[in-house]
Length: 309
Image 1 (cartoon, rainbow, N blue to C red):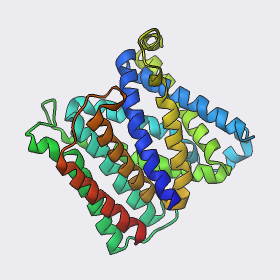
Image 2: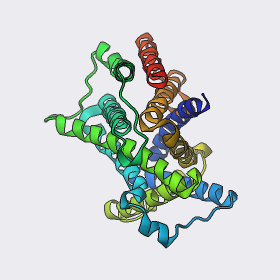
Image 3: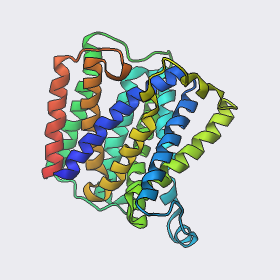
């Protein structure tokens, strides 16, 4: 029961991180520099935790030579997942930007567990678990998409064929699930979820630094988030992201990628609804609709089937 609780809690944490990083981006202006700040703070936090647990920050050359190359790209995949969401929003709108990556995460998590990809523990796809996945997807659609449909709001913001962008969102979400699996296995190899999370964040921060200098050519926009009347908590997004990745790294070998993703999504959607309902962390207040609670019930039912069967 404890791993399930941790999964839901870290999902709620990532909802808070999203709201905090949105405010940080509003002050900084550049989404890439805001993401770099978040990853850098998360890296420093995980470095301190790693050192406090009397572990080295480095990796031996022997381990680098012995292990497969894909074990070290978790942080890179995390950056792709983050950047994909930034690119999707202008083309398919907020609702589909939320749904498509989630769909990719759930489906890829199911495939990884069913076939035992990337050294994951193989889990049989029973009829009950399959129905649970259907309930989870239904709950996500009802919670995220149905309110806009009922209010006759469009989810596409630009003209043209939206399907390439939708597919990009699904692929980005799938890479997020792959990152969870990779980081979990890295934690097993290093015998430390904390050390593995630090390595993942460090690689992500270095990747974003390259992106920033290619796109923005400098880091000058970061100064816009400093000074008076700037909330102190806008700098906490990276710390929360570090806790989220650490939780995923710890849970993936225990629960499997699919269950880790689903429990975190339950916490993420619940946390997102609470933030919208009460306008927390500077978010615009957007009262929850009754139909969204129905979606959460479907999601909870699916989670129970996946966990118990």
